[in-house]
Image 1 (cartoon, rainbow, N blue to C red):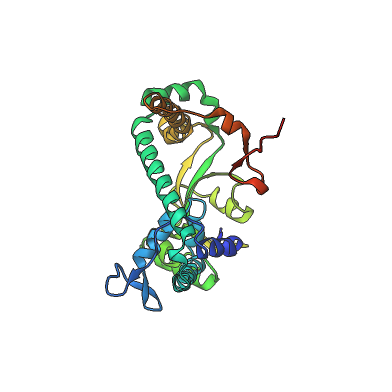
Image 2 (cartoon, rainbow, N blue to C red):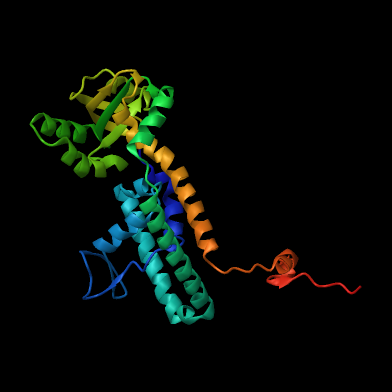
Length: 302
């Protein structure tokens, strides 16, 4: 339930050394947008910079920076990267030919990527009729056991859990208390765990949640992760899910192949309207070994 610990070093290294393609994360003093989080030798890292950095993370890494520990690791990585950037500038690395070449290559790649993304997203649409047809032909794929949708607040001590439970019974917002107190990565979503089947959670959590009614609030549930307060927000009986329930799931399944189809057609159309000459003999003789990188295979004397 807390994903940060297992990947802390990974996130730190990736961000510190700029392995994610992103714009500079800092703003000069006096021009800062948002509240200043850190000052690195006169350069401000603001709340806006931080949020932008999170937005640029791959989806599978975003949950890792939702906890207090994850936020600290991300900010530390941004600070280290800024220090390295400053030192690199002092050493003249930013003016080097190598950096200039790579920036030009990155610029070209970004232009192509942006163009393709825009064109493909515009043209790759899956109609409701296609979605319904897929559903009707594959209903068995959407058969599930009983499912529950729940939210939880996870804290480290039983006393804190008891204090929160008193507030909830007094009418306080579950979502707001989850955002404020929960140590889990779901805190930013008000504790929402989404839909899950029996056996998806640890036994103590599973036993508690599948014995509750929709809208019910649990007592304090202790697991290996800490102390939970759970709220059931939805219940599905076993059976085939309705079309409306799985519509977006089907769309996410069909869309990639549709996008690939559009991309292939676009590629062929562009090639038809361009004058392209391929030197097959040069390509065939191209030697990519380390000793002759970028050259062609030597011609032997006959």
